[in-house]
Image (cartoon, rainbow, N blue to C red; front, side, top):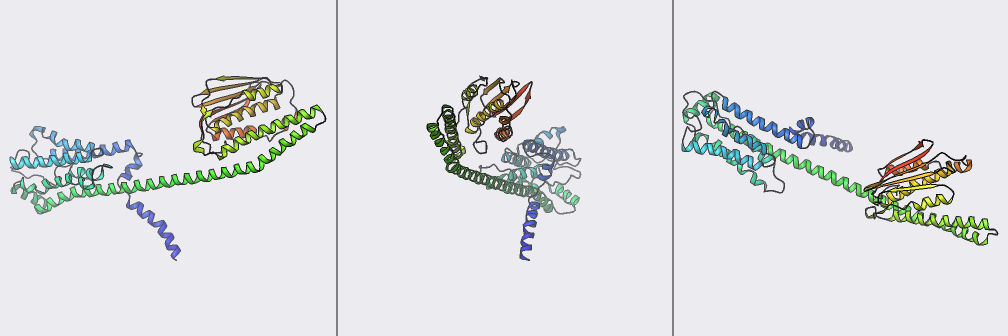
Length: 447
């Protein structure tokens, strides 16, 4: 039973926490994606709400404000305009609203009846809070603290400044008007003032809740991002360890066997009774030495830290062209631009693309002319290898040799680096084309 209870807690508690952390902003999040557009839409709604409340207060037949032919509407819009800056300057919006309320209160104390209809001879509408945007300003002050700014207690003075004129409304309104309010509300004057203070304090407390919820969500997001970074680092460390193990295996097994083959080919060259055998042994020994050099490069790449792979120019392809020309394949090389610095993975993949394409041309299109076109850019290289139609029938045994996955393997290598690869018939021959980025971290099989 204890295991069942723990399982229920793991399922129920996250749901309860999710419900407690919800706010009205989650409804807006379903309509607009997070970011600048949604923030602008929320600010527009708040400003529109403040303007509507102010307009209703001003146009109410029982309003307590002198209209002065509509001119009094202009100063009433000042707190509304301040709400437009509630996100970037919340304290400014709060102080503007509080300053307006205090100014009305001081003017009425000095000259009663200047702004408010304190001598009205008819029933006035009850005053619930003043100014109408006071709760919205109190919410903005506590809901949008500036990160790394002033201490938290500095957000409350404008709220307190708003509460003072609301709590002292009896000082600027005559008792006759207050009695009219009380009669309309069938309640006491103190209850009316209490409701007004509650609206402003409630707005401030709601803002504190939203700010606390935002901090919790931000903390959870940072923890998730930190966990993701740690997971990535652990995976990278595992890849580095696996690469080091593969490098050790290749050094201890493959390199050892190839070295024995080179030594045996050298011995055969010395002991061969005829010249053709000695030439074949020498060619075999040279190929083995080249394989050892390439194997040494691969082991060096596996052991190198991927983040410290040096950027060097792309490899010189003239050696590959010379090898093909030496065996009777006419190859034309055309290079455009200057080779950019490239990572080891990009250099080796570019070399393999040309090498595999030339090998396929020798096997499947004997006697055909081959054109190698290399176009360098500042951030990559485009390789195109085209061969014409074969001049004679290919050797069946030579064409059948190999694993048959040369082009498929090239496609995988190129796509792992973020490049593109195409291969297929072109006119009367065959074309291999690859586009590679210049710099790619050495982290995958392409290295």
